[in-house]
Image 1 (tube, rainbow, N blue to C red):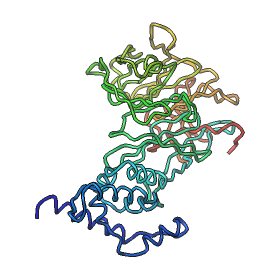
Image 2: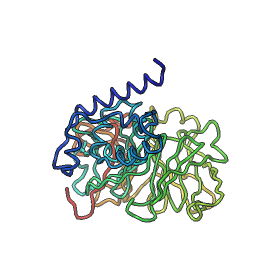
Image 3: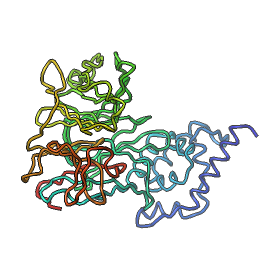
Image 4: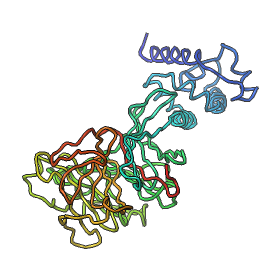
Length: 419
């Protein structure tokens, strides 16, 4: 038996197993569809024919037209039921048959995914607008572990899911339960961000891989646009896994050793069909000495009132946190040390960081961390230069600070919602 025959027989066997476990509910289909499918003599060889496997009983052109008209009319529910029982390689073949099959299978796979947010701690203060949450994902009540939180802002989460050799992207609003799917890509991005809520006509999404390429997609576009940087980052500088900040058409990326990389999207946004060339227009030096680079545990990037702030956590160094600010509206970009946030509060995280005004006395000038002591939030107090926790005696000037969960995100409650 040759390799082609073996693959064809294996595909037929795989599909027959899938069709044997179909649970077709009459309420989901028109009666004519149910009558057509209620017999166990469902001809799975139609799929093999659709994959251009020859059958000499009728002319090839007539056979192809007949097959296309028959299979393109299958309801998406049925396509989903078939596809979810295929192995990875046959799912890829299934999606390659035609656009209709690929769209239906992918759509039903995404619709079957359920996102649930779970709080990790007591709200750090009764007036705080933010809470630390973790995302649990399920598909048909089975946990899905490969969903990744990429970015969060303005009440929306941007998520990615690698399945069957391609990466899928979703927007999810945990308050309205609205889910919006973006076009998929052949690979995931290291870090991502978006400019505006996905309901805005001016929304665009950016994904970056290393310092050598990035992808961008605007609302209404059907595919990602991938570009290489004309000039990459220096070999000894690497992008951190902190979500970049999009500000006035520029993308700001914090690097692992403290530098800030900047590239401009404005020309592309004005004329996406033009001959666009992208390069890192600024590499802003770190604001601290090189001796501290190896002590960096984590870094965060925050936009607040037209200023960019970088927050660095250090191991075996006192103080264990350093904060710097930068004015992105100036032509000369330079970090400046920050000793006091005054009435501002930072909620920092890799996926997103939020800046909020203090709503009560005594809670400003603090950085709330994605760390948990029991069910209490840990914060860094810039005045005392110590990490502390509300309603407890916890206090330290060294790192680390409690448990840091995976797939966590700071969520700001919508206005008018006290829960």
